[in-house]
Amino acid sequence: MTFTSLASSSRGNCYVVNDGETAILLECGISFRRIKKGLGFDLSAIRACLISHEHKDHAKSVMDMIKSGVEVFASEGTAEKLDCALITPVEAGVQFRVGSLEIMPFRTWHDAKEPLGFLIYSWRDGERLTFATDTVNLGHTFPSVNLLALEANYDKDILARCERMPDKVKERVTNSHMEIETLCQYLRTLDLSTCRTLYLLHLSNAASNEGHFISRVRKAVPRHVEIIICAE
Image (cartoon, rainbow, N blue to C red):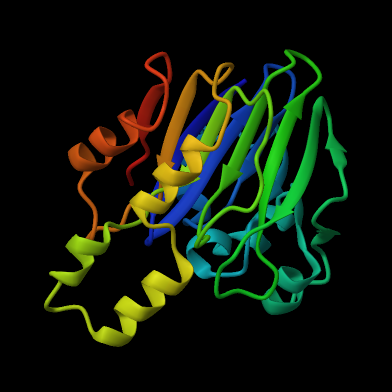
């Protein structure tokens, strides 16, 4: 299974998951043209698009995806917020399948109507991916995961030094996004013996530091795990 980032920031998020038989998008929070460009202007291979929540940087091109014939999956709360009856509703804890991919939605914690993360299993190669972004924390552990794609949004000390950022914005960040130490503590609870790659998603432009984050995460995961930062 492969995980490819087309965009990963507060300005837009979009990722491609492909097991060689089935390809799907996770999020469509960038322009439709940019999505098509990232896919080599060939949308025909994309079987579905999963949306974690309704915010524009994750769902900007939802109607373009639907109009192009790509089935879009999201929670009922997300569909309601997007005012789109054409979204296929899914719910936490209820599996569904797209081609060779078995998908288990799970609850996340964000300032959105009904946000979800996704555990994705490939029947083709037997690999598992956990995807979770825009969440304060994670309340689930996932055994035998091969790929992790998780939010690492900000560092609390860097955020505190952001003098130009209003206190109200800082409060929203801390109440709706994953802080780097929270992520590291979560990673230490996991059995990562089968994990080969960890993707760090949605880094804050103002309150993160790539080198610092890699150094912090490196101490929380086994040496064999590759760490990749997904930037915009």
